[in-house]
Image 1 (tube, one colour):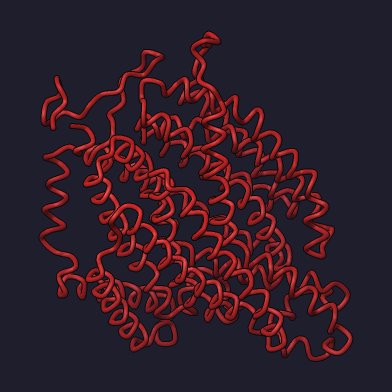
Image 2 (cartoon, rainbow, N blue to C red; image 1 turned 60 degrees about the horizontal axis):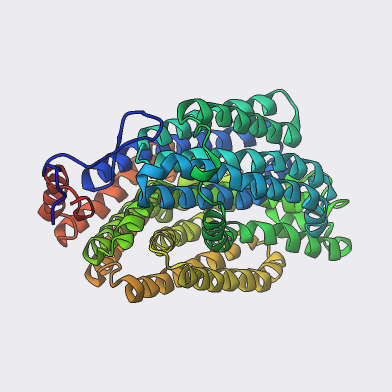
Length: 553
């Protein structure tokens, strides 16, 4: 099929209703550029986030860092739902009819006057209840302050979704990078000024509102529309509500283990404080870093969460590395399913899931090969000693989580929200029940972090398999079995090489870096030997430059 008036070598153009330069629509070339823009921005955002996570433990006490990490996780659970749900809602409607993108933007802003602000107020009002459930009323003020971030993010996401739907990926990437820089300055600046947890959250609030102003200037407001030209808000709210339910379940899976560690270990140490006071420092190694733990068991739980936060920060790198693919594939799948182009949809599914698995595993296998050495590369020695075992398990679990995320994004982009919700609910239920049973048992032996990581990773693997099965049934495609086998062989080979090399014990941090390079090289070499990577991938890259997507034609 060809579109009248469109040359074979030139992508379709989308006129901006405000008279701005047209934006190229989707397709392999646009998608390729989009992945590069957003991948670089996400890499920058990821590095900036690591700077925050690596510097804060050096400025704050272990307990304060653990408390901040938990507040950030709870706020992120809501923020991620609002941001991703809004971007997907605005992007979906804008991608289907690009000429109406600015009208969709205005509808999105009106939506969050009714929705985003209400959620932000509700978050602030619920802060005392959440703090009570976590057995730590000192968390009330930081949680209430974090509610302002929720409000700012809801409107900011509308502008990002507009840029995404118009395929203005450079603007989306630029906003991401600017915000990452603002967060580093705000959070670390307030921490260095000595304002503690409340100050760090305040720095985050300031960054959120500055980037909202920047988005208004760069992406632009939709302009004044006559009442008859306005799009109804209800379709966006209905789509957001369906996607939001999935995203709540999805994001809860990322944070449920740390939340349960805080609540359940606080309960355990409070119940056993009388008998464990003398033995606590030996039975729970990190007790030495929890000043006043005997009087306040919640402080001990905060210290545990500090170590677990470090593990989570590194273990999530595989997932963060493939987020770019989720932002780009969503509007493409939305468009291909809207036009009922099943072949293009299947191609998007297979290519995205395969490359996401390879890329995520290439990062995770480095951490799984010698987790304590990798953790010690960027964190103080006590983090490496106490969090190393947990990192090995959670890094591999997050590869499964990456596949799970891609599958859910594709299902939502194709309008298959119910199967995505059911799969996410089952996965979250498994992680919640498993951790609720395992954490109190592990608390007796001081092995909470490793056990929580194992349970959470197990649930993620089950979720990845289940979502893949659903994806194949709904859209007829998923990861090729042969690819899974070859990647598994490459992973096993890389892990073996990592375990054989001496690591930090022989040459310190320099040897750890050499070992990491050897592990990655082994992984890629085995993929080439097994022909999982080869000339077909080079040809695919060349083809992206020559052809445009069937969805454009």
